[in-house]
Length: 322
Image (tube, rainbow, N blue to C red; front, side, top):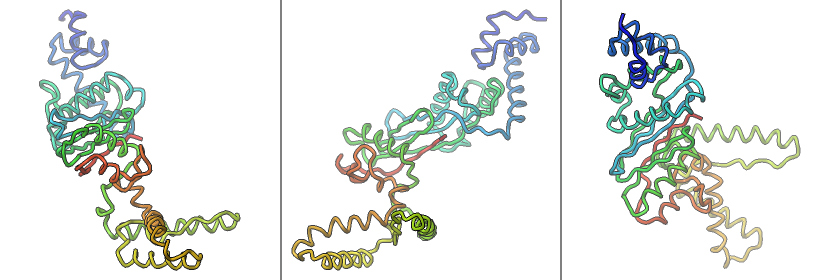
């Protein structure tokens, strides 16, 4: 029987991250053969991974990486079962190393098959660490973004966002980070109302109006102020004819209120803006460019970006574990 030294155990532990006793047992079983001991630990990880395959891995660490040219970024989540593991510095370090590898791969499948360390792929590392940690470890979300300028923001290792800008203007890094914070905080799902499918908008309109009308029945019973029932929920529904009709309705209201016609031009823009705001609630929730900017709620995101020069937000990605 080969003598197993503390140095051998330490080397194996550093290579695999496994506990000291597990490393010693593997080396004993492998009769001191270092590569065979690694294989023993990986097989142990595979067995544990099979047993924990149906476990919920909703905790983890979200990380991002941007290339040196700031033209490509990745955001991914390394998922596990408990927050205790997710907060471990070694675990977060592993997540960041995986993001370094991921930066060169367009798909999650390609990334998992890529080399993590000499002789071990990312997928094999995940299985190995499942055995080491004793929890299901896997890649959850995985997003790649390319643009003339890419920035990112990570909130508490739980939410990550990437934002692509149309051009690398001066101050692009700060702007991209600010908009990434918006994405992380407000959870937009699309860039603009122009991206919506008409069938989705129609279905959502019907559902939202029905929900408000149901709430109003109870509010009326309690003698409380009723909620406004919108005619529409997205700017995509407000064509020129509808806006013209809304303007005529506003003019009739001003006339009924006895407002002099000579001051209508000063009142109309604000009233029309309020009509649009009341009838675009879906855009405010789901569309990044139409959301109120969290750092200056007097502007929406598109208006804020326009103050920074000849630049636009062209794309974004978001991953969340909360």
